[in-house]
Image (cartoon, rainbow, N blue to C red; front, side, top):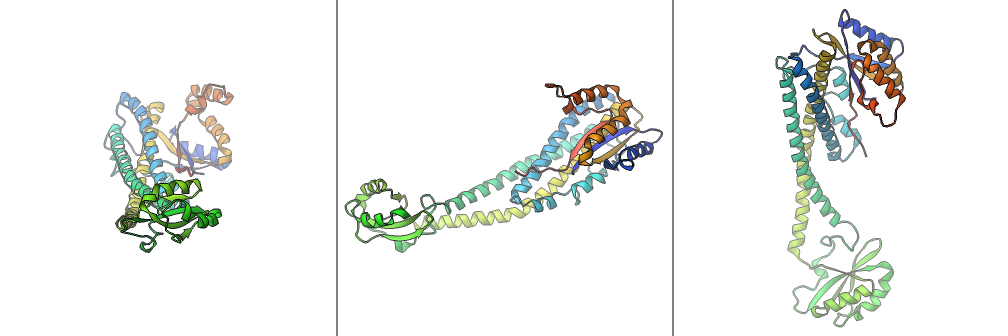
Length: 383
C-alpha cells in the first residue's frame, strides 16, 4: 500500500498531545494506520494576502510537479523496456526507496533555504522542475528518434518475403550483372504454387532464359526465386506473374546501397547502446530531484493551509498516515470524529458526499475539517 495521507491538526497544549491523541485513535486502539510525524521547519509566514494567493499557486504547482515525476518514472519504464523489477529499484529519492523518503522526510535546507519567503521557495521549485521537464522532452525526443529508426530498420529486416529487406539474403552470384540485355528478377511464390511456378515461369512471357530459376530462401508461406530474362520483357513478365499470383519484388542489386544499410543498422545499434547508460543515469538523478521537490511542495501546502485554517501563532502538528487498505472508510470516520470540532461546515460536505447525490460531485473536493493532502507513491501505470 503506497498511499499516504498527509494531515495536520492544531497543537493542543503542546503539539505532542495532538500527536498522542492521533496515535491513540488510529493505532493503539484499532491498528487503522501506520503514522509518522512529518517535520516541517519554521518557515517565514508573510502576510495573509500572500498566503491566500500562494495557496492557489501551490495547488497548481503540486499538479505540475506530480505530472513531471510520473513522466520521468514512466519514461524510465519505457527505456528499461518495462522490466518492472528494474524500474522500481531505479526510482529512488536521495538514494532510498520512496516510502522510506516520505516517512522520514527532512527539509533540505541547502536547496530550499527557509530564510527565504515561501513564494521564493515555490519559485525555486517551479524553475527547477520546469527545467527537468524541458530536458526530459529533449532527451526523450532524441532517444525515441534513434529507437524508432532502429526499429524501422529491424522491421525491414524481418517480416515476410513480400516486404522485408533482401540485402542480407541475396548474393552477387545470384544475379546476372552488367549485361546490356539480360536482367535477373526476384519473385515471391506461395509454397502451394511451387510446382506451377516451375512449369510456367519460362512461358510467362517471351525472352525468359530457360532453367534460370533458383530458390534462394523460404519463410512460412512462400519462397524467393530468381529468374533471368531480357530487359525488354520486364513489364510483360511482371504483369503475367501477377495474374498467376507470383509477386515480382522491386529490387536492384546494388552492393554500395546494401553495405550502407548494414552500416546504418550497426551505427544506430551502437548509438542506442551508448546513449542508454547516460540516459538511465540522468533519469535516476532527475527522478530523485523531482520527487524530492514534490514532497517539499506538499510540506509547503500543509504549512500554508494550516496557518490559513488554524491562525497565528503557528502551532500545528503535521502527520503522515499510511492507512491500511481495508480500513480506509473507518479511518476517515475516526479522523472526522477526532477533528470535526475544527470546522462545522466540513460536516455538511461529508454528509452530502455520503449520500452520493447524482450530479453533485462533492466527494471529489476532498474537504475535511483537518488539513489533508494525498501522496501516492505508486507512480507507474503499467499497461
